[in-house]
Image 1 (cartoon, helix red, strand yellow):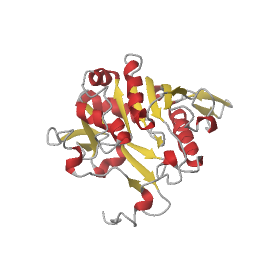
Image 2 (image 1 turned 90 degrees about the vertical axis):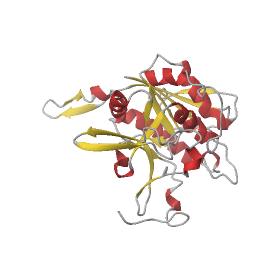
Image 3 (image 1 turned 45 degrees about the horizontal axis):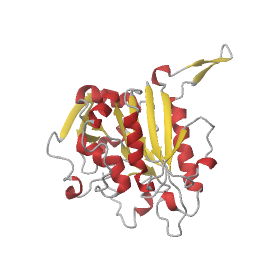
Image 4 (image 1 turned 120 degrees about the vertical axis):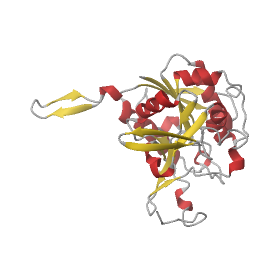
Length: 288
């Protein structure tokens, strides 16, 4: 299976930097992007082996889940940390674009569109996300096989913390009015399917954002026919959120698993920003 992943990346230190892209110290950004890239190859590179103890050698494993990966990182000139990453040469391709850095996510979508027909799956993800599930794309294929190409399954995005709750999912419900102009939540609100003996429930979420999306070849071809595919529209929260989510929810019916099944499809936010809010601006509900 051939996969194309596009990643927007920007770094420029600012004294008042609140986002990872503008903090004064670049080390966190270097680590977050490096780990994101390493994770792709740790999970999906075909050079995985098992030690054959009797023969004192190795043999190949996980061939059925190996992917042929192409990762493209999009930046503006100069403002990036790519020269300091801890990954080998050849892990990714680098493209520079003379655009507003806040619009790099839209450039990524254009690149995906230009490559239609060359890959089986196409993905976009912010530069601090990490997949941990080797069955991630098999799950997406399974979902599309019965839900149809007009439906997209989004992962739940989470952060790890050093104190309870150790794991927190960060894209909980928004006020209904925030996404209501862009998606009809009352249409096909739920889907149900059995997986591994468990009855799953998929819900159209009030917050479809996950900092990423992954679509098949058929879905990309369908998406390109939609009027929202090409324009730069930043009307959902802001430019970064709009690039990742606005056109997606305008074109497809977006689903996530219900909260009690959140970890069936998830993605880690490596630049921990939300977890420190727990117990401060955000109350921690300790019940079940």
